[in-house]
Length: 177
Image 1 (cartoon, one colour):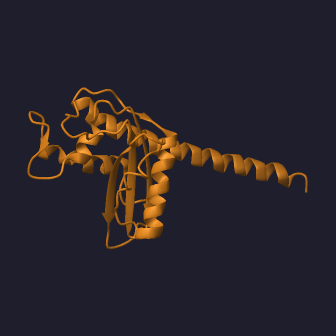
Image 2 (cartoon, one colour):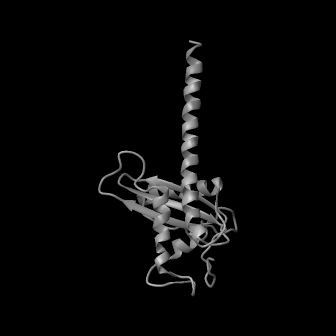
Image 3 (spheres, one colour):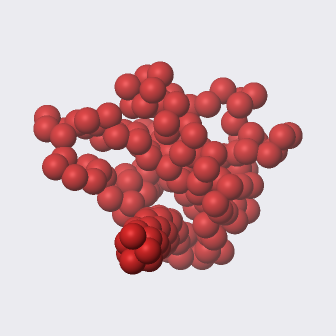
């Protein structure tokens, strides 16, 4: 009996190590994808925030439970990861006719690139969106934003991604960079 306890402990340590490594890989991929776009406009790199990631995951889980992964931004009162501090938020939704065999439909890079694709609607001379939505892109590259944290939830053949940002961006009358 005594020999089985160390084996269980070793398995638990190996399992915890793998899930920790996966979380680090997920966060690094998201930070790298964000910073790829931020480098293009010469704004400082973002850092990962575990607190923002928890905040984002809570909202992704809520959307899964209450909305079947349909996108809905938090209300202004609840969109504060720290009381009194507005938090920026980008949402993404993906659907497929069949659920993935494992994992998620989107990759971190594809999620961020979907927001960044709005660059085609952003006019840097005026700071305005022309011909389409560009607020996800401008939050992504907002100069004063320093931290990002993201979460995601799967609903079978659809999923929702949430990234939160501090300080928040997208202030009326201000340009992102």
